[in-house]
Structure formats: C-alpha cells, structure tokens
Image 1 (spheres, rainbow, N blue to C red):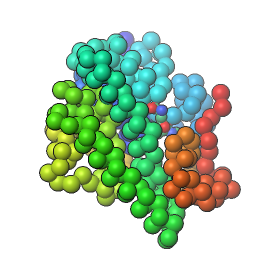
Image 2 (tube, protein in one colour):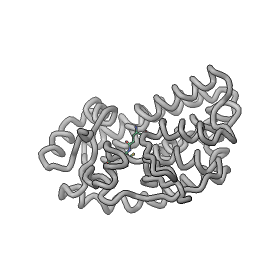
Image 3 (tube, rainbow, N blue to C red):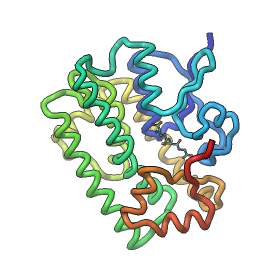
Image 4 (tube, rainbow, N blue to C red):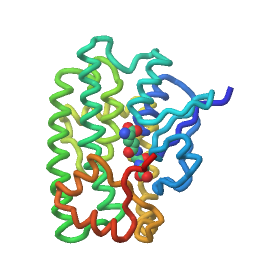
Length: 262
Ligand SMILES: N[C@@H](CCC(=O)N[C@@H](CS)C(=O)NCC(=O)O)C(=O)O
C-alpha cells in the first residue's frame, strides 16, 4: 500500500492545519510541493486539484481531496482517534466558526503582509498604510481569540484540535511579521502550550524554515513567472486596506491571477 500524499507548501496555513491533524493522529504521509506552484498551470497538480491550490490530499487508492476543511473532515471521519473535535454539538460548531473566520478574514492579513514584505507590492507611504491596517486588524483577532479561549486550555475546548490547528499557523505567521501576543497573555500562553506538542512544533518549524526562500521569489514575481492568486477575502483585503493600485499594477504586469476556471 502506498502512503498518503499531501500536496502542500510549508508556509501555507491551510496545509499546516492538515499536517498537524495527520501528525497528531500519527498517520504517515509524503509531502510534495507541486512544481510551478503559484502559476496555476501544472497539469498533474490540476488533475488533483482543479483550483491549483494547496493542500490537496491523495489517498492510497489515488482518491483526491482538496480544501483544508474538507480534508480535515475526511481525516476525522477516517481516523476518529484521537479526536480533534469535541463530542458536544455546540463546541463542534464553535470550533468550525473559529476555523471559518480565521481561514477567511485573518488569513487575508498574513497573505497581504507576504505580498508587501516578500514580494514588495508596496513601498513608502502606501506600505505604511497597509501595514498599519494589518497591525490593527491582527490585534482585533488576537483579542477575539482570547475571548474564544475563555478559561479553556485550547480553542477547541478541552482538547487540542480543529480550532487550534487553524489558529496556530496564523498566529505564528503574525509573529513572523512582528505582531506578537503580549507576553503572559492568554494567547501567548496558548502559543507556548501548543508549541510544546511535537506535531505543532514540527509543522511551525517547517514553515519558519521556508520563509527565507520567499524573499528570493520576489524577482520571479516581478517577471510574471510567479502569478500570485488574488481571490476572495485576499482581494477584498487589498482593496479595503487601500491597495487598489497594487491590484491594478499587478494585473498590468501580469503577476496577479484570479481563481482558475474549471
Ligand atoms: N480554501 C482553501 C484555500 C487554499 C489556499 O488558498 N491555498 C493557497 C496557499 S496558502 C494556494 O495554494 N494558492 C495558490 C497559489 O498561490 O497559486 C483551503 O482551505 O485549503
């Protein structure tokens, strides 16, 4: 029997969510970074995920599953032990709400900081406006996550699971851009608790290790060899934060793309 294959990129918070789930359950998998990731043109990868996005999971039987939330559900359905969500219906719903908010609105902030810092989409005054907005929003999500933590050890409640695995890559991503939860705060203590878990630590370390390589991609983006996907909440973020000109410039330069048509 061949192993599961996970198409991923170490920096993708969505892929990190899935890797943590597999690792917490001790399920072996091979990681594969698709060739020409960021172009949306690799046919082998398109056959696995017509959206050309990571993560995508290919089972031992060759069945392909895309989207981190759907992959997460598949993992829980197939390997229920140890559980990564509560058995209480409201707690399960709450973890899904946290996942949805973070996967859309929070993720957009870190994505935008990558566009600015790695790919130099904005400089000077515009950069300042965008980064200040990102900082203000990040503080808002930190406060919301603290509220969701309440008196619990984990965002998923009494167990480290779905909501934690969605949040940790994003909070670690914010920290890499210089926005760190206050030392001694509930969120900072939660980060430390989470990073004491081998599955979480390995996944977050892999992300940190691939961060330096991103700056080298700036030239490829400039030349249009690497077309960044501006879609959904990410596109909205850039426009709402005041970066419409970033979108216009990128479209003119041919280094921005939208979601793939099927
Ligand atoms: N809703 C999807 C989003 C996946 C996604 O946006 N992945 C990004 C990486 S973080 C991607 O592969 N983008 C394609 C690209 O940049 O070319 C999920 O939860 O898996």
